[in-house]
Amino acid sequence: MKPAIAAMAVAALTAFAPGTASAQTADLTTVNSARHRQREDKLNVRVEFALGTFTFGRTQRGSLYRTSLTYDADIFQPSEHFDAASGTLDLAIDGRVGRRGTTVELDDLDDIHQELEVYVTPDVPTDIDLEFGAVRAEIDFGGLRLNRAKVATGASESLIEFSTPTLAPCEELEVHVGAADFRVEQLGNSNCRSMQFEGAAGALRLDFQGEWQYTGDTDVTIKIGLGALRLYIPRGMGVSVQLDRFLASFDQAGLIKRGNMYRSRNYDQSTTRINFEIDAAFGDIDIIWID
Image 1 (cartoon, rainbow, N blue to C red):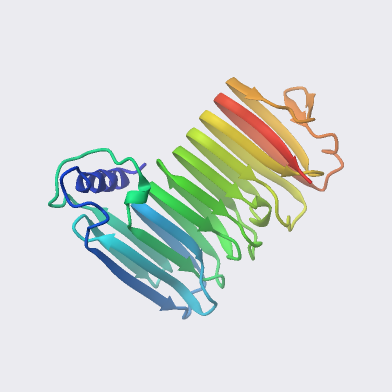
Image 2 (cartoon, rainbow, N blue to C red; image 1 turned 30 degrees about the horizontal axis):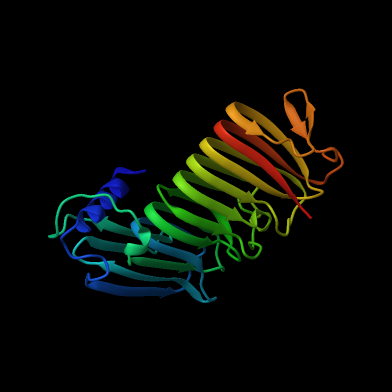
């Protein structure tokens, strides 16, 4: 996690100390912004958000982006800037020590009523970089002209989904997770040829269902420290697994060991294949075949 995000989270926790005003009684400010598409032929979106609820999705055609932020002005100072020359939207919520108390741990995200919503156009190729602290996030990349996406989060309960197929080939999807319960669903709709997932601790669920729009190989690299890894794969997909594990258990789920690899019986005949490279320390690795 970047130092800026860590500082934002600490400042936010400072504000919710016992004996001071709670998030439920804080004076919240809402700001909205939007930009219609002009001559932009690409979009770069960079978001830093420390604490609260985050929603990401696509906006209507003709609109380049739309944002809505509800925040506590005693603690946070929002910053939003769009650079037309590069097509870059930068959105950050900077934390500052408010007037309310001393640092404590926050037990429940339900007590935090800050909300950030970001919606972007499906009309131009888009690079996305999202970084969170203690955030509950719902992110839908479906229907975008996604070029590349990176998501980094600390202690969160988050969902990334591709609810509909993306509109162009995606170079790379990269996800870094701290202590989290994290799900990524409908990865078959992502159109990404390369995927990287890294989890420190917690549960990581990766669902590879969807409309696979191309033939060939998709390379998926997964590194997990302590926790459970669940891979949901359409039955009939060609699958190979190269596994480096310490004390992690692995359910082969019908895969056949060939040298240092595990492969599905139909791997050589499949026109669409997923090649997993998994590095796991502690926990369980399970493959669940979906009909």
